[in-house]
Length: 340
Ligand SMILES: Cc1cc2nc3c(=O)[nH]c(=O)nc-3n(C[C@H](O)[C@H](O)[C@H](O)COP(=O)(O)OP(=O)(O)OC[C@H]3O[C@@H](n4cnc5c(N)ncnc54)[C@H](O)[C@@H]3O)c2cc1C
Image 1 (cartoon, rainbow, N blue to C red):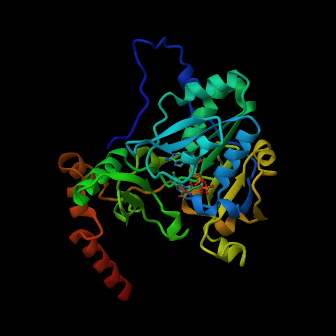
Image 2: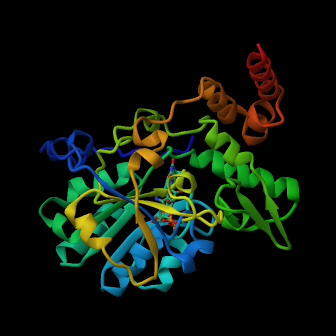
């Protein structure tokens, strides 16, 4: 399904056992209860996925002379992590990319920066942050880790197959993509595809994502789906803020949930160069499923994968999409059950 997996090169391995010793999955996260705030940066909302927290943190790091790592969309619309040293370079790191990001070569670069005495902000999924924490070792003090609450990462192969299928159906090449278009409003989750002269708001890919049909298998057993985070800061959508803090963010433009998990996280989030509105919040009022357990795989995941591998994207769209007979039947059965 195009997921990337780390592999040991046996011809280079000296059997020292260090990789097992530092394995991120063995390490417990910080034990302090996180401090939670709802936060939003009015000037950043239209180009951010939630309340603009990630960009504000990244910009702050750059203005203080640090280096930032985050996920960007490449020319071929694949997604990978990048190292950024200037404000202009931060633009591609904005907004969520709902697909596994390629981390090839990134851990080594982070370590080089830390060894050179640079301050580093790494942003990514909790598993990526835990991996970076485990290699930082004695250089951890110059490293700030900011993870996202993560629903799981979808398949890069399906993302690629989807875009190719859309180009075929439209008969013209794609020029840009947005995984979740902020201009549709914070509560709307649909991808937008841009062709030469046309914007197409689709929801095909997002539909498969939220149905849990194409998540990386490890995401459904994620050890980081809890409040015990591997990072200094956690960033997320502050779902439920309208009810928890009436009048604070009820314009559908977005609001971030900020969890300060360590004293270093608290210090980093104390002040930002961009003006913000922020309020303490009880985490219980804005909690969400992936803060207590991993996403469950859909019971037809294997069948979805087999169909994709054997027949490609158009076949999974016909068999598992919103217009498929099986989905319509499922909806019908649920409707009947509700009325019994
Ligand atoms: C796969 C995925 C699943 C998510 N699931 C949830 C969820 O269940 N609940 C929730 O509240 N929030 C979830 N988020 C986070 C949310 O969508 C926003 O990314 C987050 O709130 C930051 O928004 P922002 O406005 O602060 O920053 P933005 O300016 O939108 O910045 C986006 C940040 O996310 C990072 N990022 C984007 N795509 C990826 C990627 N593929 N891999 C690693 N890092 C990436 C960037 O490096 C950047 O730091 C998820 C994000 C992703 C990528």
